[in-house]
Image (cartoon, rainbow, N blue to C red; front, side):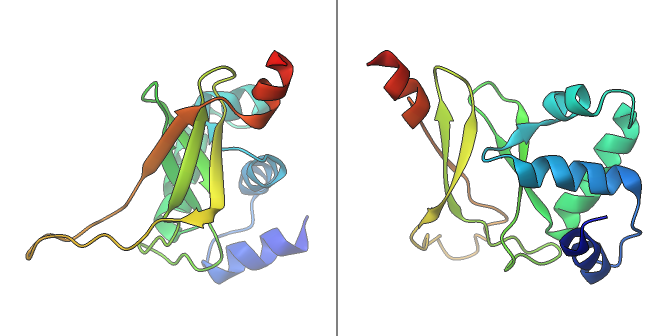
Length: 142
């Protein structure tokens, strides 16, 4: 198994299981966020739907992944940056949803400015999605 996944699971006091390694492997190999149905398709019968749901929920609670809702209302998941902690995500960056291919990208280099909320308001999460045409689809048009 991959040593960086070992360390990540140890850091969050999670058992090292094959299904968890599989999900981490898929998410780390992709340059875009991935939906649960896409994960189910890639994993096939390796992991049942309920187990996958529990893994995603646990990883999100532990600050290993973050959830982004795309333009169609589908939940997508991507690995968090190392600054994220349990119940305290620091993945406040732009997301880009391509209207041609449907892919959802984390734009980690484009952080959001601090948002000043009125007194008494507390943000639980911040999400901003830009929609348009990604670089690959733009190139394909030309």
